[in-house]
Image 1: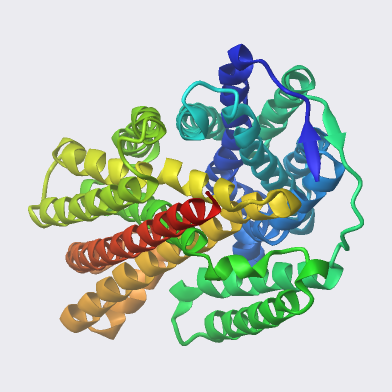
Image 2: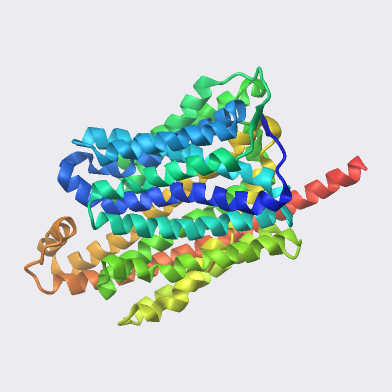
Length: 507
């Protein structure tokens, strides 16, 4: 267990903004990497390793972030953050000088581990600083989330701009930002006071959880190859089996295990998992889907495509501050804010579908839908963090608080997979039904190379199928958002009643 020296209330806001900066490094890294991936892949000849090169950072992060949270409890959060920022410098530094795919993959894996540790420890610190911040943890989370929004936008823009100079230069952005964060952290982060513990490390439990995360996420990420694909079903089934083994191991002798598995029966923690869906699944579906829609329907690319995302992203900044204050002043409950966010997301999805069917000629026609969908994704963010932090007891604080990232990665990956499967399947089916097998083969060639197909009717037909798939996706998305919102509201209310009853009985 780690404790820290108190911090003056007047410096809490600066500290929270700094923590948002740290978290933003983790958020911007995959954005920069995805922008640079195509150029790097051609330069280093990724070939069959392209999928691994694209996903290894996320897999490494998701598999290790809970373990690094445990390390932060035992070694000190400040130490872990500083060490992780140095590892991030090394990781993406290796990528920037990579001479082959293996070197690139090793660097990205190291960066993933480092950035997961940075984000997990930064988020865990919010409770410490929030307790000294006017308005409490909810308002602190609002400032933390708003800072993430601002810094992620700036960092991603800088990284995307650097890709224009060269992919190696782009991968130096994260090391520079991490080095700056390291220097600031020396002064802002409070000195660690680590209390020694005899709690076992539970190495086998950590390995089971890490492998379960890697296999299941690998399977989900390959869903675009087909739901019946061996690369989809095989790893996912293995991941589920490992999760079951992890569950029963943690259930046995819980005092010797590293994760409090009893949380899975706790209404508030289950509600937090649902809020994670509303936040991360919405982001996974939203960004990928409308970005692809704008490319196909409006022919946007490069800077124009990036600018089209701004209404969706920028709205998160003021909303985080507003929602944090509303929850902090007990005007709305956390579960109600999550419920509202889910309903708003559903409304934004329907607006997007209707607008897309109307064949707009400009991205300006999509502005209302972009703002509403972005608002829906942003509103649950404060509730998500608050619920997780409340469930993080002192004994397992770093472990439970870091689980937020793993939960989020699952829902985000699922959102990406469902988006790809629904839209791609319907586009292909529409092309096959109207133009036949030859046209579908040409569509595959166009996906791979971007060359102009010989059949001039192929792309307009594919666009028709894409719009149909996008519309269906938005409807499915809206229904899921409503159902999960109700689920969260019910569980959150049950948790509140239980806690109220406990207080009455205690008094």
